[in-house]
Length: 199
Image 1 (cartoon, one colour):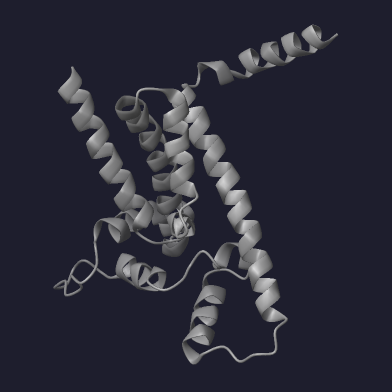
Image 2 (image 1 turned 180 degrees about the horizontal axis):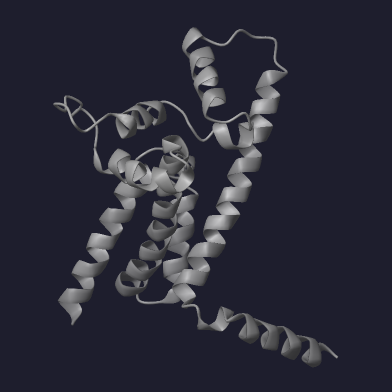
């Protein structure tokens, strides 16, 4: 009975094409979805707890809440926008037919959001969130591949990926900020550099 069940599950996996997906991608997607679910739940519980406290948030906290509501009325989505997210959204909407004066922040991230926004109905903020999360998924993939190459086995590589998502500030990787894109490009550069060195 147990063997039949396992065989049936393996057959369904093969039918769905799961086995055709490289192990590094399967692991990266699993970690990404797990981290997204856990941190979204933790964030919502924290918001509910703070809302029930009898305290007065600082003025800048109220400003940020209004900015989040302008992006989305759904708090499980809008709380991923904070601090510099609104500046990057502003940069991604600036016209390019006049002299550019905003050079104090990295421009690759808002420019990627600008390029993706037309596919999302011109919603630059959501485009920035998508870019950050795609970068996070790629970051986890390259972390696993680099870990395999440098640490020598799959177990150590998976541990390395788990350490990344367990960092105290790892929630920033899922927010509409540049951290995930920066680390994704860094790990990709080291991965391809190591691969070329060992060819």
